Length: 402
Image (cartoon, rainbow, N blue to C red):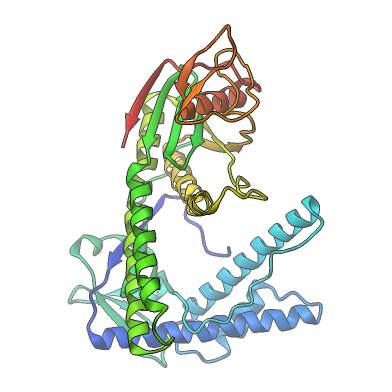
């Protein structure tokens, strides 16, 4: 992305906004204008591609600012830069698909939404005398004034995003902390992390110290959401689509999703913090995470298991874990984890099938070790990352956290 990068650490703070009806209407107009800008940029780039041209990010910015949207020029440039980032990601995925399968399924951005999240950069931000934050929208449109908690008045705000969350607005503040990032550690021990759906993660260090983070709260939250959505969908199926009652039920579904998303995000943040704190306590240098991105490809596990796997938020947890670990100088890498669950971390015996239940029982008559299955997998991942093969790291002690 063409954003100006900071050499110091930045953090994102989310603020639940309580706005007046006038502010809500103003925010809706701004998000609608951002939606028009985004749609025009997508159409412009798609038309250029059809003519065998690839507009640069600068050309996208110039096109957007020339259309006369009631937005700040920096906001328009942010949308152009976001589109450029999405295009680069799509290009990389298409090249990867072509090399691996010979078929391309990823499409370039083509949606033309009515609304879009609006971003203001630091030149468009100004604190007022009454303590409100002024978000400029250029000379042709009125600014958006928002009252924020006093704790943010002295913060170095680099960027602000106005997001709609089901039934309320949320402000995402990117704040420069002023702290320099720690250099990556060159000394210490390695560790392996096994991601799971039942347990969020199991982390084993070279010394054998193991942390297992229970995922009971996360699974309960997902189960509650699924039941709530099923109940509302059953009611909604008896109503005429677009009717007042149908729309009311849809708003309830959106509200339930938003509430569950916030709760799940909180659980994942706390779990990733527990993992990083454990790594700091045990002087971890590098954290190897088992790659589970293709775990569902070409597999039908049944209706219930398919739902659990599809709702498994391992990518979000790994994202939280990575940036938290890098802030304290711990490197995070992703490695293959094939047969890590079937292989005994003590005697290296490989079973013909994955273990059943939550315990791993070695089927080697000379071993017969009994371990937590996720701890066994984490030990094998650690062994593969450090020694290049399984069976070199054994679990010595397990600590459980919720």
